[in-house]
Length: 413
Image 1 (spheres, rainbow, N blue to C red):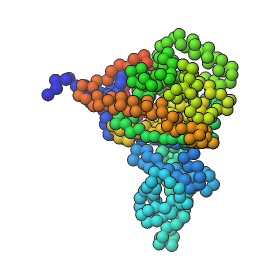
Image 2: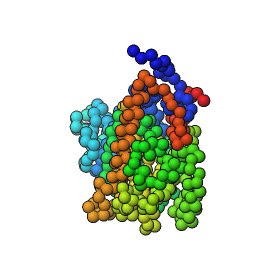
Image 3: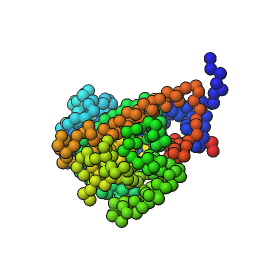
Image 4: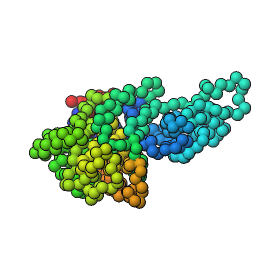
């Protein structure tokens, strides 16, 4: 029998420390988390190229909800709840496909791709098909990227949500990109542990030797996992970066970085930084892996990182971009869903090899899977107590405060 003196299982979060145990493990907490994220955030789910032709669709899971994303005959993209208006059956049972109409497999109620009910057998004479369209889900697109929101009524203003990313990504022709490859990394850890790991690079040197071989060591110390992720480290590098940034602004390739604090609605950040070590893109050998997706015709050796919210991230290089979705699947399970984009006219096997395009981040994410699963196993222990963050973990300290506001937790200063 353990003689450890346990803290309260429902202890309050302390600013600057990791979260209390129950926030990483409790099913009721997860349900609250998913509802808060789904209704307050625009969730990055995929790229328009996945549904290139009318009738193409895919389904996406948000908690217990299933959403159909489909392109209609007029090339408009819609999101519908995957629930028949008859008796509630799921309509689309496959993860993706192509159809002429959306037909329920139970009683054959049939819907237009745009969601209107077009056919239902043997209904009463006064039955009005117009009253039984599929329930819509909020959907918006930006630069080919697809975002959804599950608010019952009004969603957050998308124009406000995306505004600061427009100049940041203006050089990248993402609207004319395509998905070269995608992969899901099922991770046996709470979504907050997965996000916290992604938001700091304190672990990079011991855990990610391949990633570190590509990136400048002092840059990772100064910026870690992006703007705002380290606190006052590597001041000498900041002088070097300031000179590089000035030259890039003069060349018209650089816009100002930003990093929101915990009082912001979406906890957004973005910045463009040099990769370092003479590498022209973020690949295993630092060499190009695909044709250019930037407008100025140069493999520029820099990467633009965009955190739309803590579960929706994009990294853009001059020849490819990477979308990340951190999808909570259970209190101890998260799917890290990743898609890699290349130029639409790039020919597989000629202009790019999908295995090379995804190689660096596949190695890195498999390492992340291991360390976050180990982290979750330790957090479940009777011995776990929240520990203090380092100077290289300032971003996740702020994430903890943002999360506290998101779901209405109390905090000890």
